[in-house]
Amino acid sequence: TVREPSWYQHRMLKLETPNVNLHVFAPNCPEHLRHILFRDWLINHKEDRELYIDAKLTAKENVENVHQYNQKKDHIVKVIYQRIFDSL
Image (cartoon, rainbow, N blue to C red; front, side, top):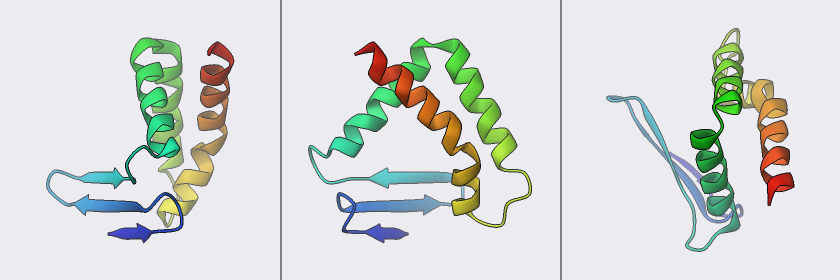
């Protein structure tokens, strides 16, 4: 697990089978709401969903850890969030 109490009391729980990373935040946390916006946007915007899938598949190549993986897909995530916030 990952524990980040200073970041909205974030926890990440891992499961091997099935391979799952479960992120848990404090109640009414703005980060949780941001994740919901992102999820709902991808459900309703096929082009951005495909862009995100491609970013994730590309990001997993030639990385040694999760931090590198997240850095490689960070630009696309920011682009999608900008589209979400511009639409509100």
